[in-house]
Image (cartoon, rainbow, N blue to C red; front, side):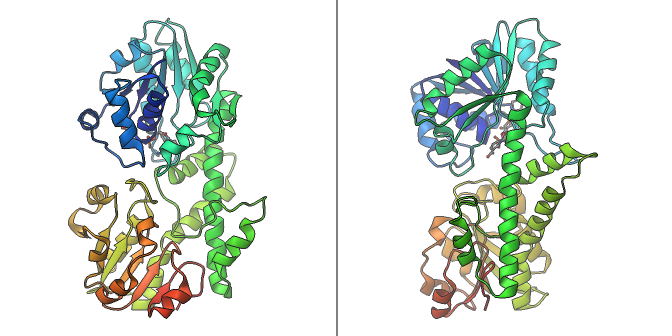
Length: 434
Ligand code: NAD
């Protein structure tokens, strides 16, 4: 099948590459000509495990190409995906201007029947708006499908190749059949393709993210309470995770959720209810998360006092989660900004997000080439993102390099008794602090 993907970001690039990998002819479009130039030169603008090799193989096989020319891409494609960003507007709602503008651009150039598939996360009712925009712009026949994307950064290729489910919202049976055929290679193990109306499909994406964000805030609140009453949240997590109604996933306490999806999607969900329906629980989820992002620095100030001037802190992990270079709404931003505001210096390391971090912090922090370099002359180490390479470090070396052996672990990756035995003062989340 000939496919066009408009918007070559995390979702568009992964979806386009995976569709090419299953034998389709895919052309990815973006307005960012630098991004397209980067991709054409064989480099990737983002880090995503496994993606680079897939992009290389499929461009070499000439099933995958990149362009800024939307018209050429649409003309040669029977299915056109929209995977444009839907950032948060000033009022909290999702801004769908670019999605609708893209729908109009597609309609302006299309020359025969096209299936327009929206993958962007959009407020309920957007598919109908897309349909109206296209209908008012072209006389050619078309179908509109809502196909929310559930991949997670850090495992995006795997998620796309083996989705738990595919959701298709739409009223045109022929178009649904085409999309089912397209997704069939990814659901060979029997995971379902769910067909529903466009509004339910759009709602499903927001509902999933709301529930996941709520899980994070809930376990963080339980962690804070555990700490207060002398329980250990790691034990509590194991005990509750074995209950099949709860499950072991996504109940790890930490420094709060971030990223390009949960914060903005939660606000968009709250905004969808306004003004008649107050989303009380989701507002609380947000509040808990904001508070949680301040927790690590609160512990730092409890240890060192409120004035941190003259001190230096080493930070391991900047990306909003491991295995991604994405810094959008990362808790590290809040943490580092408050350390800087309290007068201290920061030296940081992340395996993949250094370039993105530079765009945010400029020369206000020091960037280290190796994880151990952040420790030189530092008063303490802060662990913000749980990259695998931080899990079994050389503790002896950490102790030698730090001024004092103090670790603030925002991800609970070490065992408190073990760290104490090694001579560290160790602070973590929801467990007994030193
Ligand atoms: P992104 O910012 O990484 O990519 C969006 C791309 O669209 C950018 O490359 C941008 O240059 C391009 N673009 C913007 N306007 C354009 C236009 N008019 N024409 C062509 N290209 C244009 O965003 P993303 O993370 O891929 O997210 C895309 C959508 O998918 C969002 O709605 C997001 O909420 C949703 N989503 C994201 C994820 C994720 O993990 N990142 C997961 C599921 C769903």
